[in-house]
Structure formats: structure tokens, C-alpha cells
Amino acid sequence: MRRLFPLDGPVVEDPVVEDWAAAYAPPPGRHVRANFVVSTDGATTVAGVSAGLSGPADRELFHVLRSLADVILVGATTARRENYGGARGYGGRTPPPVAVVSRSLDLDPEARLFTETAVRPWVLTVASAPPDRRTALSRVAHVVDAGEHSVDIATALDLLSAEGLDRVLCEGGPHLLGDVVAAGALDDLCLSVAPLLAGGAGDRLLAGVPIVPPVPLRIEHVLEDEGTLFLRLSTVRG
Image (tube, rainbow, N blue to C red; front, side, top):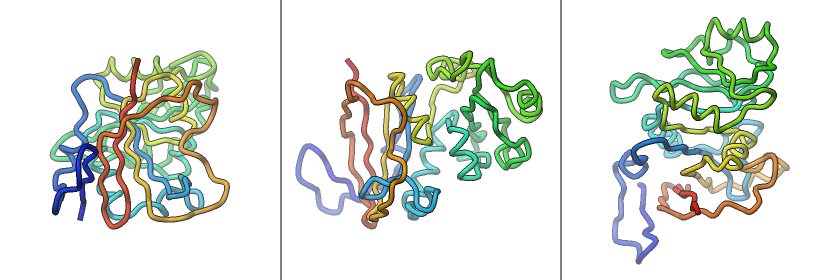
């Protein structure tokens, strides 16, 4: 049972939240959201993948957030490690395409991402990427440059927006999310905190260069379902 913990008063009796789509509805216009699940001690993976942290409610939210997105943004390492396929259609809508960020174009054209999808994926790369890999991937995806030697997140988001893909759902990994935050592009963080202790020396939520000064966040809501906390946090601008 999903329970809502209000931030401006006491918990109300039986505060059941039935409509997650309404609770997570993005505002009109361009909106960049990230969705992550972590253990209570901050691990983002178990045995190298996030599935070990995810319960039924988190998997349900995963699909709800995808249903609200125009495009799913993911780093190439995460796409390979999690064996990404295409997104499903929700409520009769055309499935949102997956857009993979890859400087090296080290992606297999025969991977599920390109073969098990109802819509053509995007690959956001750089002008200096290997020409042979570009040719191979261009047969199965829209391959566009968003920088010369490194992918510029602002340029990548502009390219997607020009195609009508304004509501962006970033699913990681930590380096890509770090780049999104460093570019000042993140609007919303949906963070599921699983009641698990994973230990180890795995990735943090963000990786890459330090964010200086740190980006302040405002808690929009906290939900709970069978011990997992679901936080929606927005970035505070200005």
C-alpha cells in the first residue's frame, strides 16, 4: 500500500496514493527528470545491475515514469550492462524512444536496444566518433552529433527538443546523471530508497567531476510502499 507522508503537517489516516501518474506528472514544456533506485547505504547496483534493488512498487513506478516521458536518456555503459531493449507503449501512446549517449559508439547494432524496439532509437555522439561504427549504427538508429570530442548535454537536449522530445527521463548511469546536473539541466529527481544494505564500493548516484557549489533540492513528496521510500525532489534554481 502506497502511503503519502506530507511535508507540511502530520501524516493523515490511511493516506493511500492510487494514481502515481498524477503524483509524478511533469509540468508543460521541456522537463528533464532522472529516475534512480539506491540501497539505504547508497549503492546503485547489486552484482553490477540495478535489478537487485528494485521491488514490485519500484518496477511499477519505473513504467509510470516512462509513460510520462517523450524520450528515455541513458548512457552507453548502462545500456550495455542492463541489456536495454526498447520501451513499451503506454495507454495507446507510441512508445518513447531510447536515446543513448556514446562518445565511442561502442554499441552492438544487434543488441536488443536496436532489434527489440517499436521505435527507432537515437544515438547522441560526437563528430570525432569512429566512422565505421557510425555507419553501422546509422542503419538501426538516428545518429547525431552533440559535440566535437565529448557530448555536450545542453546541445543533446536541444537536438531532442527540436524533434518534439521535450519530456526527458534520464535513467543513468551515474556519469551521465553527473553530466546532466553539471550542465544545470536537471529539473526533477525521482529517487527510490530500498530497505537494503548492500555494502561494497559501487557507484554513487552521481559520478564524474564534483558539482561546485552543490545543487540544492526541494522535497516535493515522500511515498512509502512495503518499506521502500519514493522521493520526488526538484532542483532549486537561482
